[in-house]
Amino acid sequence: MTFQRRHLAQMLVLIAVAAAVGLAVNFFSAEPLPLLRPLPAPVSAMPTVGEVDADFVDQVRGASATLLVDARAAAAYRLGHVPGALSLPLGEFAEGFSRWEAELRQADLLILYCSDPTCSDSPELARRLWDKGLRKILLFKGGMEEWIGRGHAVEK
Amino acid sequence: MPLKSSLRGILSSTWLQGLCRLALGGIFIYSSLDKIAHPDEFARIIANYAILPDILVTLPALVLPWLELTAGLLLVAGIWTRSAAGLLSLLLLVFILALGVNALRGIDVNCGCFSTSASDTENAWGLILRDLLILIPGLVIVFFGREKGNRD
Image (tube, rainbow over all chains, first blue to last red; front, top):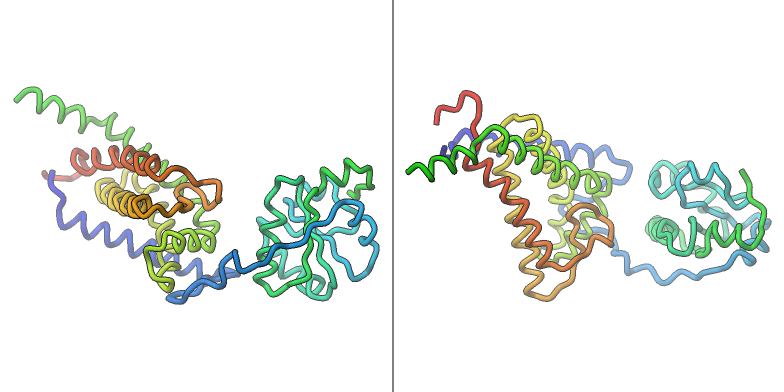
């Protein structure tokens, strides 16, 4: 019944396999974590991002230098979004960011939103974009709920 | 010693061992997935525990979730069960220690137990109790598990 040397060997094999897989996945990841180095600046390094409401968004959305970013899942975006907004789902941040990087960096103002005032996807997206060096970010905190509630047009 | 041997019989019975394997394996498979998907978040959580030096937080963030997943899968599949359960029991002891240290220091940390979400924050003593409960099936497998071809 006792634990034998065989079991210790199996445990070491398991640790080795997990380490190999974990490090390999990180190596091939779009955003690999630094090994044996501290993480990049923590979340709190980002200052509070300004918030705007639906009417402000409606006034500035036509301007060419303003970019509206929908942080919700792609399926929610397809069901209806603020006209002109691009889709950058938080869950597919790496792919989405590389697809839209040029546009995001060119814009003079980024306005991020998700479904309603309680959703956390747009604040989290703001943090990720901040980590990528983007600074001119505003949050449309009310999101789709406020946009529809104020009777603005929805694009599909 | 009929009582002792009957207790041992129950603990090493196929159905109880199977139940423990599925419970422990399932819990760890489930808990590994979100951490595998968000290693950066998990690394920040480990950093918040303020136990490891800054340069050492990414290694466990990358390796621990895969260790949980592989050991969990082996348990469910019934392969190397005692080693996998032993490893997960050791991990649980480490988690209990880490939670306990911070509970005593009064540092309120995001658990990082089942997800990397910030809402996964609960009372540390409750989390320790939960880990102790999860430890039970682990120890039942380690001490009373039987393996094919096992001579002892």
